[in-house]
Image (cartoon, rainbow, N blue to C red; front, top):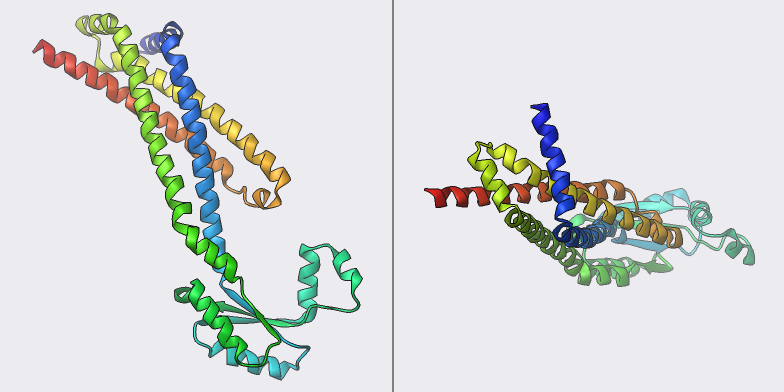
Length: 295
């Protein structure tokens, strides 16, 4: 059995070398499709992270004119909690706001002013069922009408922009990914079919001499597996280099690279499995046709 397996493996590599005029164009096309597929899925992963972060945007920040006593903070918090659409309220003191500012921005900006220019404020989060641009605007206006706060802010522009583009950001990467998977399947099937036609006499002789389906199918399946693994491997390596290069320039990309390696490994696995599977299906279909012709 081990001797037969060794022969089948050597036959697979011999077939790749002998039919390189068919194999190389298929390998290049698999590489390009895998590159586009990895790019599309990477973009989709970015969209998923963006949509998960979108929930944090449905927050209203209500700034007080100055420091207030603790009992007033409690009373204002209760007042805000009874506001329609409000899920939670968090009070941020001026010192806490200043410390948070220094963590995210350069302290040189604050050196130009005396004291602490950031006033205390309340961070109001909306309930999940009210997380849409219309309810965010109405909540901001309702809090402003209370007359307690000096200024009330909400990221309305960002929320409206994401809401208008949400469907397109999800639909097009998924649509492109499905199209590329279908294209890969056709490419692999055509490549195996051409290889079969060029070795049709050899396959028929193996069949007539009593070769089992496994003995006939294995070299072609291994060829498809190698094509998928090599083509997708080079593609995801190039994509990883490209994303890392962008991350070194754009901090927001660098901060959201978590899970990229797992996603790209999934692309390699998916393309490799598809290559092996459709190679198997094509050879099995070819043998079925030949069997029906003999009958």
